[in-house]
Length: 251
Image (cartoon, rainbow, N blue to C red; front, side):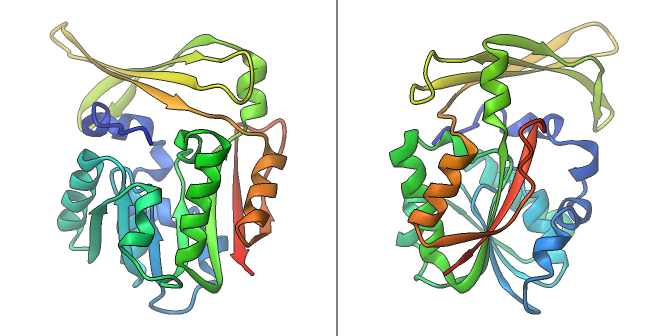
């Protein structure tokens, strides 16, 4: 899985304004959260900088936050401390999760932030989903968000430069995505993400990272969820929309 170590310190520029505050990020999943009992055990297994995990803890849930990036885990722990949130943090890739937790430990597992495409191909993706499914109790739910890769591939290789400045912590930056779209779905694709921070005095500080990804069609994801024992209960997939959410239950 891609590490995001270079972008961890500036990741807030990649989070939308609506999801920057932990409570608002958690509220964006209200439909799924209604399925949970009070004090539910929840795993955020692609926690990034921790906004969702901290928001869930603020709702009284028992939250564990993991990520393949040590830098992201550190930022999540720092945010948890700032908010006084009881979040257990752990550096672990998807394939490592069953080594840290017993089967059927969690009521809900979150895999959000368009992270699943970093699993290496169909084999890696199924292995990741299988790990998540193992940790769910029977009747528990996986909440997953994804890019609509059908749209991404249709647009081809390109450079996307933000058309406005993004402001965070009193600073402004331009976000740039460079897409390398491989000839076939099964091949490794790349996204280079650059954050160009603009200083009022003139200097520009650029941080970037080249990320590997393996795209998938929506119907492939549906089939893989069924393969690991998960049944889709809610899907916002729209072939014309940029992103979608899937909520699947463990059969």
